[in-house]
Image (cartoon, rainbow, N blue to C red; front, side, top):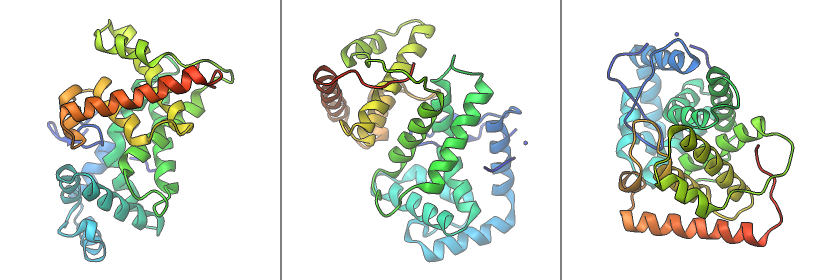
Amino acid sequence: MPTATAVRPGDTAYDTTCTGARRRSDASLVGQLNSEWVRLCDDAATEAVVERWASSYDGLAGCASLPDVERAVVRATGDGTDRILLSLLRLAHAGDPLAGRTVLQLMLGKAVRIATTRAGRDSRPSLEHTAVAALWTTIATYPVERRPAKVAANIAMETLRAVTAELTHQHAETPTSPEVLATNLTEEPADQHRTSADHELLNLLTWAVDHGTITAADATLILDIYTPAPGCDGGPAAAQRHGLSWPAARQRASRALRKVARRIHDDVPAPMAA
């Protein structure tokens, strides 16, 4: 896993949920990775690497620096985002460490969000280390030929699945009803109850994706609507980030939650995290 050590005030970090989350500048692993990223962006040697990427991969055409790659991802939607991420993943799998590091930075905000929703299971530094390590492993092993669509959503869900597996206790538990979770989330409960609801929603959606009940893309949409990353808005703003109208996003999320509810009601108790 990459290592790094305060980044420029006002810089923003991109993740697949929100492009406005402020980059942390502390001494944590995440802060160190952000600091390393700033240094990489300022290194003239990386520009030559990015220019080589642009000449070989359509998804990176027109990029001449790492900030250009970040801006391209922010501007892209749907297939455009997939093309950029797939290009970087192919480069990483071919042995280009900077490409893998770029995907890590693009998805770092999502790893932080996953760690945040696991609060109480371990210390924050430990949880973030687990999430970043899971993200790095997911990037290194992502099946680019088999899963060429919804790449960011798939990476996020695989990372979530890995973190859940790492932290889960070995016992069976029936998932909380989606209807109960939706009620808790929309009633704006106190912070401690919000954290609990976020945690249970993540567990529920991970279970549902693992069992093929809903897609990773649907799970990510639900998370973004109901539990947006710090600094981001849910609801209509989340729908816009996914390229959907608010009515369409709400209908899609509702349909997915109904599928999960039917699966829970029809199935035996499912293995879940404590």
